[in-house]
Every structure is written in C-alpha cells, then in structure tokens.
Image (spheres, rainbow, N blue to C red):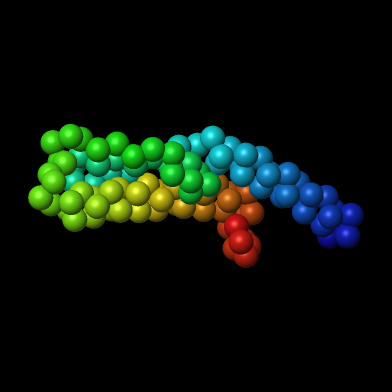
Length: 101
C-alpha cells in the first residue's frame, strides 16, 4: 500500500469520524431508574438534556431516595450513550481503538 493510498484512507476515516460526531450531537438516549419513575435523556456526546420525575416518587421525608434515583437514571442514560458512541466509532475505525475516541 502506497503512502498516497494510506493518506487517502486516513482522510476518509477522519471525514467519517467527523460525520459520526455530528450525528452523535443530535442523537438522544434515555435512561431510567425506579421502574421509570425517574428518567434522564442525554445526547450521544454525553450531555444531559432533561430529567423527568414522576410526582408520585417525590417524598419530602425521603429526599435521599429521590437523589439516588436521579443519579441512577442519569448514569443509565450516559452508559447507553457511551455504548452507542463506541459502536459508531468502532464501525468508522474498523474496530481500531483510537485514544480519545
């Protein structure tokens, strides 16, 4: 494989990665906790977009439980977002693990 071909392949991979990064910015993923009483939505870039709390779970005497549910829902959404990003990047890089991707 010549240097020209290698450079062309690198440019194609870079363009594909930029396309995927733009796609991830508009992709949203949901996570939930407590059987869905707390839900979180994040983008494919791991940015929190929204948190929804069912009023039935709000108890002034048990704020700790509500806080735990919010953290669990956000973490669930972030995990799903990372998985989607890894799948898309892996497809673009042919499974090659690149630092920071």
